[in-house]
Image 1: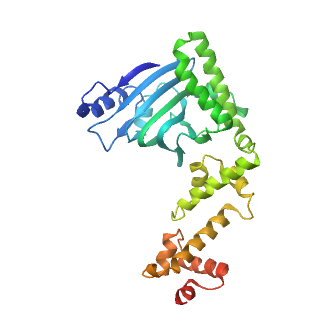
Image 2 (image 1 turned 135 degrees about the vertical axis):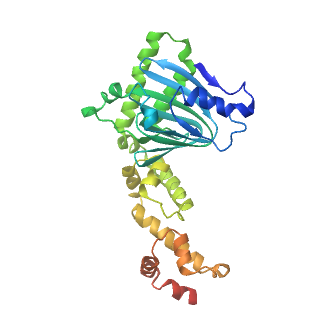
Image 3 (image 1 turned 90 degrees about the vertical axis):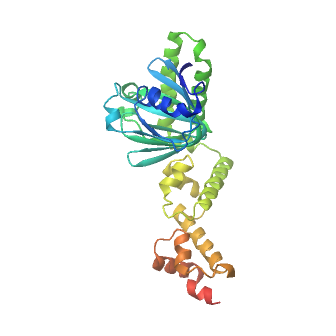
Length: 314
């Protein structure tokens, strides 16, 4: 891949400003905001595969924003597909937050406002795919844009590994071969997105159980979050909302019922610990994700047969 820009040969104090001037103001038309600017690191490499542009990007932790003033300077309408190799990137667009990492890729619109939150040092492969050519690969010309794809298995893994192989080997290929491979890459990506849940549901029983355990462990770690929505759980674990519900069909309860049960059990445990008696019942309920103390008391009594205050008095 051809080097577009790198901070490696610059003095640390000049890297951030140079990155802004060379990349953000000219190359991609975005705004960046990095907390640590004294020793910024970044590079961008580029290769073309017909209508598809691929970039290999290294970024220090930062927030990247594209707004209307940047969009007005764009000369093409396209999508971005992101495959993260290192670090994490939160993609915020159209009221959604896509959590991408080495196991979850993301697709979003390059010609609509967005924010990218780069967590830690991030290394990613980005594909710039023309909207018209890509949309034509879907029934009725519709594309499931602003979504994630699991890249650790199935078609998502094939797409991510195909992309990585092109990045590594593309330089030795002639233009005709690169153009053909770009078309084939769009075909693979379209198939991956079009299959969606059907590809997820192809997992065997042991793989489904392993994924269910992984999802449950993630939920356990976030039970105290008041904004723990099913959409967030699904996106954070690289599955669709439909597949999340499908996984919990392996149990006797729904996702929401399981979360409620685990929160109530956590509250019960806290309320019976002598060293935590200084916490009020309302504080315990709010800390475990309940937004209403009256609702908490109702569901607590329903599960355990007595109120939280009765438990405390024992």
